[in-house]
Length: 219
Image 1 (cartoon, helix red, strand yellow):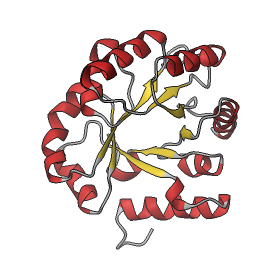
Image 2 (cartoon, one colour):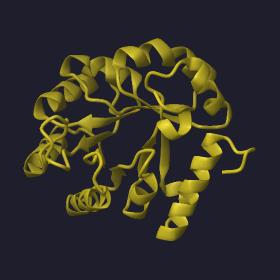
Image 3 (tube, one colour):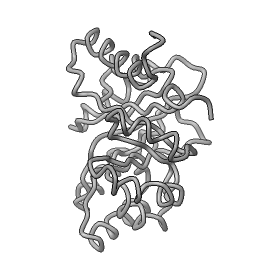
């Protein structure tokens, strides 16, 4: 990384390099800057450099930060990347432009109800518990076909699948599995890859990478 390059420029260059290796178009990969816990002062430099997509974990935190920023930057797109409680579904639908954590029938019903009430139908990624970890959110692989069918029946727009691989294990097999699941179910999007492994994820089909630490520093 050159001294003159900003973290955002460095990440963009890394994405472009990974796309070249994978023989993919750079524009087919969306960089989501994960701004959870970060104040407006830390977010502004990225907005001023043209970063449009940002990710937040908590509805309340996003409500506190983003409405004013939207007035200044109407083109920005906000992604809900954290586990979403069903009772926050309506607030999330009003605030976010995409949800990456649809993982259970109860949340699906709450989102469908919120879509009908607000008139907004925002795309949703189904989060898959790709490593079968008890402590993580996400739909079990065995339950995925039924949840996808329910989502389609409820007219919930499906953007694709999302995963967070187990920590401290080579992520490539988990990315490859999510890519296969997405293909098997006719889904275009793969939300996978974070600061330490987004280049691997891109080579295995990621369409959305969620980068926080590499842009903002350690939390």
